Image (cartoon, rainbow, N blue to C red; front, side, top):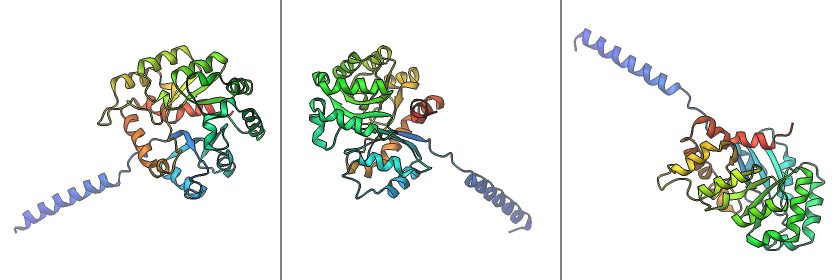
Length: 282
């Protein structure tokens, strides 16, 4: 090969390597931080997911905070009292001792005793997640719970259908409600009606159906709703069984996929800034 051709080839290779190095050395943007607004640390997964493993998982997934609940409330207390500098914990009182309390708490006189006793720890910011459907929201312990929350400035995390949600607000208009799963399948237009009617309603989106199409693209109705009410939505994992813990990374990746389709300021509000505004204590 003539010397001049060899020199040209070496020059091209050198430039190509330099460009590849420059491209390869550029650091990718870190994942969008997320606040997990529906996390359970129940007794069931504790043996498989000790606190050290949980904190490692949260760091790997760039989870900056969690709304923590459990049955019994021991798991929530363990998370709160671990005092990790990497994780902001927002503890809620769950009115359950065992899973079977899901069906009976609204009529069980011990519910009030449980809530008042847990509240004495001094760090709880809400009550829930609790389950209600339809007329069960008229149960005597429900009204007591709502009134207690309003007196103490606590949020309610309600797994409720549309009818129960309206009953809760009817019992005390001062209630502040995080709507777990946003009704699962309540149509976006009806969700918007609720947001207009109840200024103290925020919609949490775990297990929420219909936000995206079959290809992971936001539907037009949900994108419009998020852009119109960016300050009213939260995301969550709902780790109620081991399977949800095992798939935690996939759950968070799904959120980041559709959040990336929104304007950056809207995505940030839903991802973590709404939680900061609601739960950060001054």
